[in-house]
Amino acid sequence: MVVLGVSSLLVNVTTEAQLSGDAPLALGVRRTASLLLNAGTVWAGASVLAGWWALTPARAALAGVLTGLGALVVHYGVGEVTGLMPAGSFADNAPWFVVGAVTGAPLGLVGSLAHARGRWGLVAASVVPVGAVAEPWVQGWWVAGHGAGSPTRVSSLVTAAVLTLVGLLGARRAVRRFRSG
Image (tube, rainbow, N blue to C red):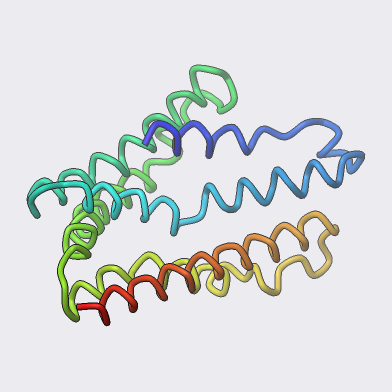
């Protein structure tokens, strides 16, 4: 939670050289890291993982909520304290806290259910991998950058490829686990 909150903040720090176009490689690398660490799949996956580690469904639901909200508190809190984000970032981003509160419990339960053998365990274990494959399409990263500079196009495509690969590997692992019994 802390690592996600801080790292997703730090990869958004942009230099003057990146903004002016004098450092396209740095911009592309930073933007790729930013897209990956700020992907909905990664944030949802953190709540699923918290549920996976929990011992009971009730604890899994609570862990999912606390992980999502905790990462947001760290993200915006560190951002405001360090001056990387303007004062009022918490209030300005209240919708993300609502999303974290509403989706945290179901995502934590998904993590808990992913332990189960059988069809429901397979479905639960496939939620994050399917999200990773779907997100680049939903976000338009496969076709992003028309009219944008090369770093934007390349970072969108690299992010799409990484999420897709990780999603396919995760889905493969879930299916293999299901087939093994």
